[in-house]
Length: 184
Image (cartoon, rainbow, N blue to C red):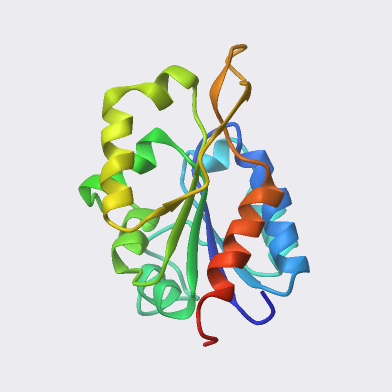
């Protein structure tokens, strides 16, 4: 991970709090991490948390980003070697599978030419819904790699598959992907 550049995109699900631990682990392993947050993600975890963990500003808007005069989506995509989306909500999976580009993450996903790793998290009925599974199948066919959700206690007070994988497991998957790539 030493010297590697990773974008961690945080989408709006309760599992967003686990992303702080994930980001911390990646930084401690020597990666440069930039966090991109969707508007909904900011309802669950504050930007200050990720800025403190990464030592970098959090990217959250397509426009008005003084740090990215060419556009955050373009400059971030050119700099990073891995795009990691954790948690990946059903909304993100649908938008990515259909190429929607109505926010920073959507435009970034379409600009990014490197490997994409997603760690979905959602209610078990949502995860099992045919529409979500179609989107997952499309993304897999597009080459997106998954750290699948696990079975366990969910915030909706149910047990089922939909719980985001532990940060350690996601970080290990990211490290494995990066180790197979030549250095930048």
